[in-house]
Image (tube, rainbow, N blue to C red; front, side, top):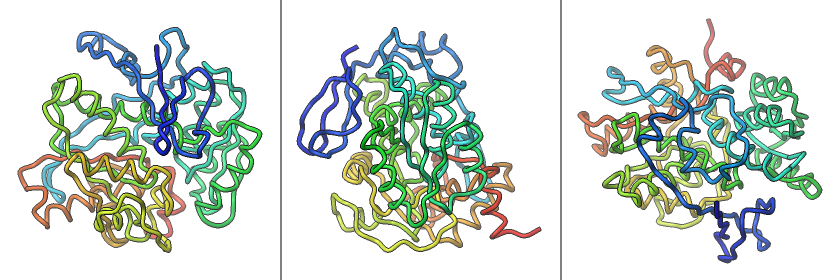
Length: 376
């Protein structure tokens, strides 16, 4: 399989044979490869993301690292939020959608023969990478902010990763990981193009679960943007192959406590707007300096969607209502439901429409944080 890595900044290109996470100029790398879409092969494939293996950038002879991730339920809801479809990605093996990206990224790292990696995360990606690294028998140092939910930190440690807690901001955690990565491969979910291509299986699943049709719109949380970029990649491939007629609108949601992408979108800019972060219950999308801001903004605009922000009170109210419907998710997931209410108030999404709400992470991982807001 021919895989081409191309720099988003200087347009330099590399093949996918040698382990690489960044261009020599410091830019992030995009990935292109041949995609083969065969509906019959998909339908007869395993009940996980690997049913789309011919659409994924991994050598056919490479062993896959899997925990059975993918093919999560797509459910209809109505009531408080109106009609919508719930994509229950919080039901993944490690409790978050990040397993889509980790499965492919760790499969490629194993194929390269990488023996040790460094990752930094606000929690869910760290837990996911720790789990798949354990399965792959690759040593992992995982850096997280000291404020990360105790459940996520425990998860990382129990999977066997070397857990390093960093005081200060999310950006301070990244800085510490980068300093350590001078001598160890930096397997960052925010930099790896393989991670994005793993996440694109969300687009393929929605297409398949909707009877091989695209949804009208998808609402996702956005911090560093893997969901936006993954959906954009997957739906673009389906469009190019003639499997769908148009791109679904992507509505990306930030917390008003940290919304550099919303501000950039509203101002018509191509780069994130500097912000001063405030405390938020939605810890999973707190990123003041998203590496792929330009790509995220381009993807959302190309889809015809938008990037919006929701307030803390909206997040907590929507979280309670989601849980009443049976979806015990973490607060970061609830931003999509809060956004749907906002989009409906503004008439952007009609009462008759059924947007897909991507629920990203399990509430069981954030119990200590939830107890700070809800008392029983």
